[in-house]
Length: 415
Image (cartoon, rainbow, N blue to C red):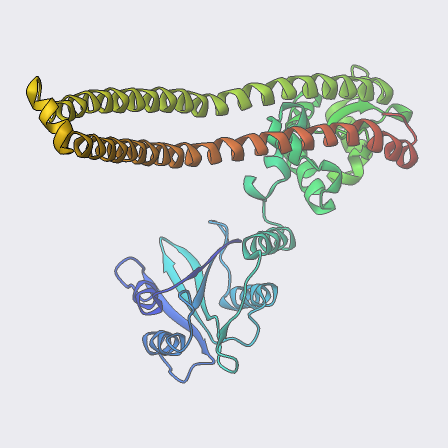
């Protein structure tokens, strides 16, 4: 079942949402544990009151459990799944409330835990809770034999030779749960009625048919590992022969491995080119923004320089206008006024220069902060691209070097 959780505040508002009878056919409080109160509203008010004694702003953890649309589960199964989620999250013993909703012919559950430990008055830390819930969700699907949703299939159940670069970097087909492999084979077997349709169905999942020993039909994964069709489809060899025929049109195991190897090589080259193209596309808006910002900043500086030059010219004219001409300047020199004016003008000119410099520094500082924010984005993208290229190179080397040796040791061939 799908598990979706989040830390949140506003426990009283959450109670109002969970007890909403307007949008649900039925609302049932299945359990209230660890609270002094016996109803959800009072329990959430209690959580809010306890949280006020701490600095925690998100005192509750809310989890929804959604079974497959066509599956009707008893409340006991939902509560058992909640107990496992509680253990996985590290919320054992914390006060909790379970509410079951029914609408549109479906049943799903909500559970709310208080994160506040009443003994220590601290909030329970929940690291990696999304990852833990996803792992538990997949386990529940496999244990109940439900069809895995695409989000839980390794790489969405795609053929690795058709992966995007991100999907290629995440591909770990050899680490699949055997139950998931079996489900992929059985699903392909049910959907096919002859050799061609089975081959297409398996290739969608990343498996390739080949002609094995004794004229049997086998499947190979992306690493060349051989799978017995009868074993993984859980059928008898004679049924496979009846549906598929002898498989004479299929390549041998060695030929299939060579074709897979060539496909991987082409995929690597294509994905590296795709990576470079994607990096260039991601960098372009930042480059354009940097060019635009640089042009704007230059215009701002040129405009300020023009204004300051014009103001300096006017102020210089005003300072020069303080001096008298003809006999007046002689009298000012004799009385000492001329030297006083010169000193005054020098001080004013220096003050004006300091003012203009401060204005320029202020503008430069503002522009630097704008550019710094943009540069941080550019640096983050550049660093992410560098790490992606490094990871890609490592994965390629691991596939080309480590995996072939492991494959040769495990399966007796050289990939």
